[in-house]
Length: 131
Ligand code: SF4
Ligand code: SF4
Image: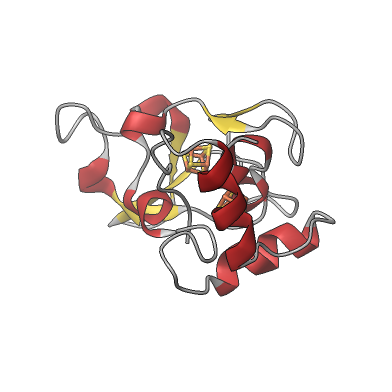
């Protein structure tokens, strides 16, 4: 059993991911690669692909609901860092639930994390995703 986010990616193909331009690599070392963003307004940019009618972040690799994962994980923007999968740390996540349901997945349950830690106690939970 693997971390749920590593076979999901639903939130990366559901929400608009907008953030302050100062998070870009041109503004700070190790920031979000500029070429993966597009201007939203004078102060904000968005991940390319997430402003379209059927969003899919340009940095998302793999197939949503199967093996999707972030191609810039260490450099992902703050909305992605702030979105935790439901119940990973004991709290609900309505955004995670909405994205999963929209892609035909069931919302995560607290029991899913118990099962994960029983089977892979050495696995460090992967914190995740967008606004
Ligand atoms: S945070 Fe939720 S919706 Fe996003 S990849 Fe993880 S499990 Fe899927
Ligand atoms: S976690 Fe990565 S793939 Fe998902 S929306 Fe953020 S930058 Fe894009």
